[in-house]
Image (cartoon, rainbow, N blue to C red; front, side):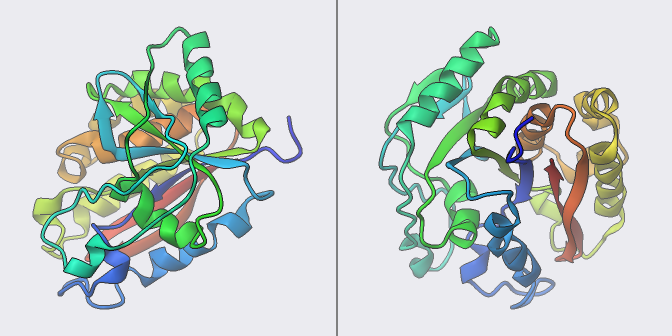
Length: 268
């Protein structure tokens, strides 16, 4: 085990360009401040400055896991109805084609399908949190898609294939949300999100085999479908948990935002 093994981290990326707008009640102007503070401290919390980030984003689904190989990704403003200034945000971090090639090779070595994409820009699951994580945009970022069947076991296996990157200076980040039912985000009812968040906390802390078994059947957890009618925002956690291996997990951030419990989880 490397003395500087990077962790695998699942982070909530907020709601749209939440850090640059004022949300109406029940959010309010400071609702996302605690998450901003958490993201702003992420790099300093790592054992060393990472060589690159591999970001599994909830906002990219493809027929097969797809790796971004673009050396200079542009911007993909994949949100709608927000103020004009939020479509001028810029995140000029470089890509890392050599890291992307390693990602592809590791997935192939595990016998899993993989594709590459040389054109895709940073979607808001990447640029929104990473404008806070690395505001100078100096650390290279490689994106990895979900597979659109959203099968949890497959995504855990995908994460396992990627685990060696952690000993090569690459921090693996899953960007999603621990609660993602947009229909009920503003209803003020904490019950479902609190129950599911407690289950996620127990699961993250469990030994590897138990953790993976629980995540493979996540939809049987308390209030699971009330929190994730569609699970694309939870699936980056599966990849991160797979990459965790025997690393212990913990809840790294937790706050009530808009009446819902929102958490980040770290392994290692």
